[in-house]
Image (cartoon, one colour):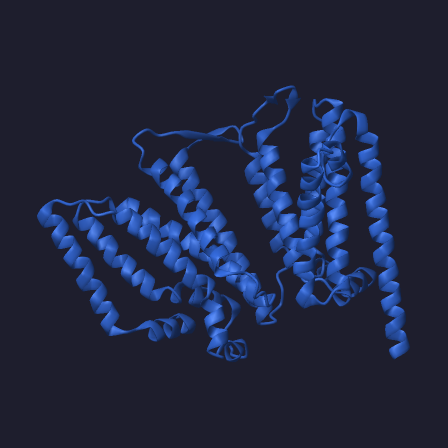
Length: 423
């Protein structure tokens, strides 16, 4: 048996709460059977599996840190896979015990066991996402992520899960077209959740291996990015939207890549030491080391550029191509801004300062222009299109990129001179 899983179960093994759970569930079940009341079993399972289990998954490693056992585990002989699966399943041992009693109650009062099993699978999917988020916040020493944000995420996952569950229980079936082939809708959704759940567990393993300072996996982010893009591009096209020919699946793929790009910019480790190792690996033709230290956000950026170029060569009017050009320039401006700030500022403060900088240039300043009645100024700060000012927008984006590059290069040279003087 997994040593970490056994340890987690032993920590939560308390006979009194376990007996109380069984007694309460059976009393409710007996009352429902006697009086003919239909208990909200599915709602209770969603709350238990997603909210309760997700909250415990998010705080699984944090509790180890508070109990001062995390450093001991990192120094132990347990592998990253052992710790990942042991904590992911074991931290919710009591949750799954209570979940099983409620499932038994649902089966006794006439619920479909297959439907209840679907809720259990989706609950594990949500718990894996919470566990991944908890590992990210712990590794980046982020204390500014209040629990309320995690609860909002879990409520969103529960609402999304209830929507999928209603499709699963619907009497009418539906089909989905993927790369020209028709698939039964519920089976396709279940397979998609299974594949994305496997990638989430893989992400948990990568972060756990990083915490244990184990050898890094080289191709995880590359394969995950390509998997997301290819899976989305397989759906049917949407055709014309007004006068603009845009493919719906390409729009969704672009949004996924954009979300992944900005997430990687904020969570990925950035330092001159890592980039120097990357450059030295390239000089020495060490391709494994080159891929190992390759900035992950550049993978998403390159695929995003390819997708943008594919949209440009389609049958779109000139204004769409101009907007795409301005949009790509401003995304590159944001990359320069975040990378420069994260390399220039202390690691403990760089993420929050970079996030504030992105919110300022992409949200706050455009909103101020809109409220002041100068909507045509928005294109000089953030992606926007106007036929009369399209050249000005491109010029503004390029000036901002050049100015930021010049400013950060000057700051880096100044810092290197100060370090040389100290040495």
